[in-house]
Length: 355
Image (cartoon, rainbow, N blue to C red):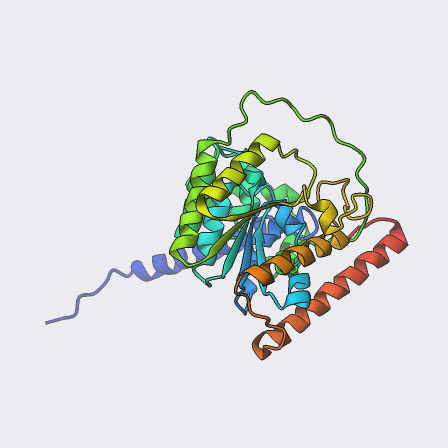
């Protein structure tokens, strides 16, 4: 019996399709935003996947975590290993799926969620969605984050095949897009975005009077899903409100979180109310007039929070652990080098220009 012969055209067609797929792959890499010199927060999500050691504490949330807590300070002071899986305007459903994604790789002892995002009850912005989601590895968690986050104008295919969304960036391409096609510079310190400059608080407009202060049902649904996810995986959930002064955090919102935490036996700390105890000085410890802490402020908050974590949770001191010591020696060097470089720019230019 003769072997069945395939038509001669199959091989060249298969080769053509393979070449086209490779070309499309390279074009997609070229056209996607790199977030290296502009809006660097967009590069935060994917940096997590470069980690080589586990973390006992994982933060999820918006800029109030990735600009206000320093994992390096937590390690130096207490030997606590931690990572901030934060992103700009990270919404609570994105935090849920970010934590779910994290649990694919490790099981931290403590998960920390910053509650400011609960003010939003529905999808907000494609630009912010992209900064959070594009850097996630493809998984069920990423698909869930996409479905929960899309605005009416967005669609799933544009996330799965980003070239469909970014094909029009041709006119915006620069040498940076070529340079960072396959490798990006590290911009964070275990997810912490460092700034050493100082811009004191100079007042805020009076907060709006709201018609209804009830936190939205969709937002609270995802907070509850996060709580259950932690319970199912043996992770302690801690809720925090960072000591950022804007956007305004209403007392009525705070009371709802206090009630929720009491109902389920969770720790909740509003660090705005504890700023004096922490030692935060809004004349010196913020770089953008009270929206976020600078390095001095972040280190103060981390010392304060770390002391509580160490005393109340079963967290090991990893400073003498050889598995971590060498890794964190390099992390601390990078941290100190960036700190020195930023102070040098302040001295030379009067402002931070490269970070």
